Image 1 (cartoon, rainbow, N blue to C red):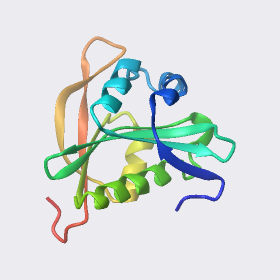
Image 2: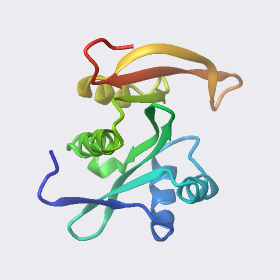
Image 3: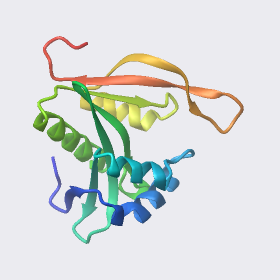
Length: 157
């Protein structure tokens, strides 16, 4: 699935200035630099997707939790969206998950993030529940999270 003009590499602290820039461009409530630093220091999996020029176009953060992978953050710069970059990152998430002999990936997504939900559904994630009042919003109140799982098992949990 990786297009010839893109490549993947491990996220390091050197990447964080650009990661934060993209995060702020895409999300109303972006992760902080500290969130990314803590993820890297804690040994979570950080993956960068780059053009052959080295330009960062997307990234993701994964955390191994007991017997499944938790996709904490996946983001693609607006100029690279709808061009297969999100799917490329998801295939890398799947590769890392298999490499650790895990067969399930869990994530939360805002119900208002229709583009991400379409991507996850297209990949094979299914909705398994909701987390009430999970996300901050611009208005007073909070937004639920849709909990989705990708499972390679014959019977999905």
